[in-house]
Amino acid sequence: MLNLKVWFLETRPQFLLLSVVLAFLGAAIAWYYGAFNLGYALLAGFGLLLAHTSVNVLNDYFDYRSGLDLRTRRTPFSGGSGILPAAMLTPKQVFWLGLGSLLVAVLIGIFFVVMTNWALLPLLLVAAFCVVLYTPLILKLDWPEWAPGLGLGVLPVLGAYFVQTGFYTWPALVAAVPSGFLVHNLLLLNEFPDAEADKTVGRRTMPITLGKAKASLVYSAVTMSVYVWIIAWVVAGVMPVFALIALLTLPFAIKAIQGALKYDDPAKIMPALGSNVLVVLLTQLLLGIGYILAGIF
Image (cartoon, rainbow, N blue to C red; front, top):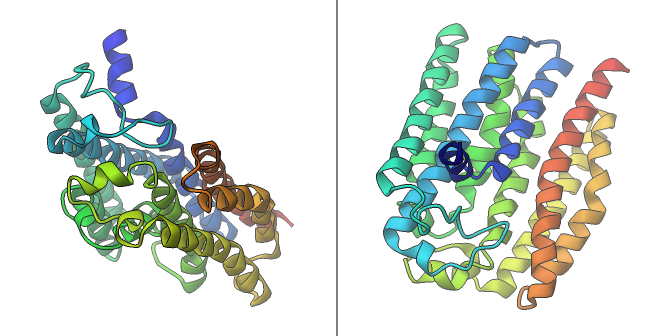
């Protein structure tokens, strides 16, 4: 039983709720436009959960192999699972867990390509690129935060929409963009406590390349862009009025921004990390609920 718990903790389950929310949002948008299959929604959500698990686990594996995990101070929001440094699992076991999760996710993706149409394939290939190459390659390039913003933000929402409808639309893309902003910023703020350790293994995260002062301004601007984006497209008539319910997370966003601007004060940055997680999850959840309410009323 203890061993199963260790395997479960290696997936970093506290972060996997993001995948559930992304799948819900994509399905809610499709439902609003008149397309919904519960079986497809659940299977797509499971596939996304496996892909996200793969990201978490392979990230842990590569961080341990590089020695980063031994230099990083763990927090509830950053620093890895701690499973490998504690020798509770072997690197080989962790690698195969990550690879196995990805392979099953790929099989689910192939199923949907066959059942819908080939236009889903490019989305899946780009998402797989972001998953496999994020830690070994993308993190060593300037502005790596785009990869999770795309691969664990915009694309999952579009993919969950596509498996219901069989096509992409401009309004669906507009609805998916806030997820890209939010997940971009989820990674960005979580990188602040790890910046010094990340620098020792050649990572090029924004707090390293721009410095924390400028990176905190980027974080603030992108966070506010989420709300401006939603308001603008509601006014333009592309997003339903009920989407404005997502603005209820604005107080948490302001708290997160205030903490990010005080990046050198642990008493400020740590609560900001928690507020940031709430903003990411609740904004997308409320946006999905907004689409459902718009479909009902």
